[in-house]
Image 1 (cartoon, rainbow, N blue to C red):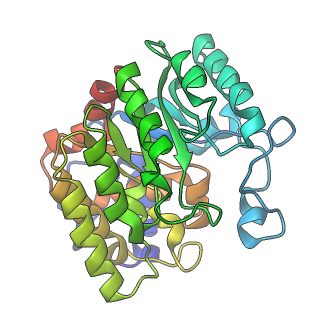
Image 2: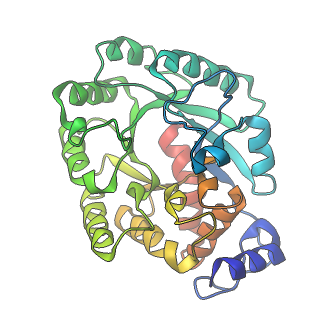
Length: 322
């Protein structure tokens, strides 16, 4: 099934993703829609925050170069039954990390949107990290920390530097998780990091950032590394994000993305995977949030209802204590 056929089928049945095709089985049209917890929600107001990675001159900048607020998120997820969302830090400049954390904590407190928890920005390698991280011990809304590590400024092997490892170990002592957003070729380094920090809970973002433009050899290596990292029981996987690596917006098929999704689900198992939207970054690969959500529903349609519910809702509730 190509993307055009998928969208046509999806439109015919609404957002329930009960579509026909080689990757889906027939489902009743009146079947209740699964509730969704989006574990990777980005929000930003460019009038208030400066994003370290953002370049308005790039093609990506043209798509992402405006404000994405709770209002836009509500519009993007309308009809999808997103019942809760976990905010994911957006790589603001380091000077604004506390400001970003304060903003999202207030949003969670207001309880007027699906956003009910957050993973905030932090630099585990910095001298100030321990003081910064300790404020979130036992926090009602802040569940973890992330530093984006796949940017050009981050050298290979950075995650194994002594101070970085100590910072991640501290998170385990504080009961906070750490999200791994990595270059796929460096997955072996992160396997070592996870082993060094056995008391810290990790989340591997975006299926290890599998790249849809990779060669077969690179894909084979990604599969091998994903199988190995998934053997560690203190890590879970987010099924998300990699759709942004498509060679162009909407230039993918279900047959392109199914191997990435299925391998991730198979190696992590049904109890250690979580759905994530990665909105609005996912718009680099799809026209709208629903395209990604419905594509994933279609790929997993042949899995049991229990497994689907764990993927889209139950595992996230349990992992984040929502």
